[in-house]
Amino acid sequence: MRSTWSRRWLAVGVLLALAAPLHAQSFGFSWWKDAQFQRDLGLTPDQTAKIDAIFQSTISLLRQKKADLDRQEDELSRMIAAGADESLVTRQVDKVESTRASMNKMRTLMLYRIDLLLTAEQRVKLEAFRARRDAERRDKEQSTGRRFRP
Image 1 (cartoon, rainbow, N blue to C red):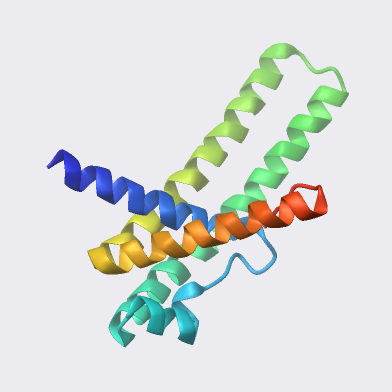
Image 2 (cartoon, helix red, strand yellow):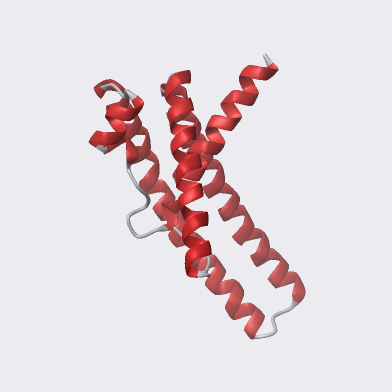
């Protein structure tokens, strides 16, 4: 049982790494829609449709939460710049972190639901892709002398 959960969490970690650019303009690379990925991972049309449904149902909520987080952070910055009372700043920090935690929870659950749709073999292939991508990023960072951000 422990081994199964360990593998599941590893897979969730892989999916988190692949979906990390959710804050990017396009909200990430929709790898499940890419024909080459579909072939390489052996995704069925049903899996692709279900993954997309999970993503689409969550992404609009994540966008709303992100807008709320931005507003809360702006308010916190304003309060700090104005030298607001520490108790007020503390309450605002709590709001910011609560919103951030809610976003992370939603995103993690989305990725977990996607993970449940994949076979063990597909998870291994996805992990191999992530490892290659990370190696490419490290190589690019070393060759350019600056940190690469997705």
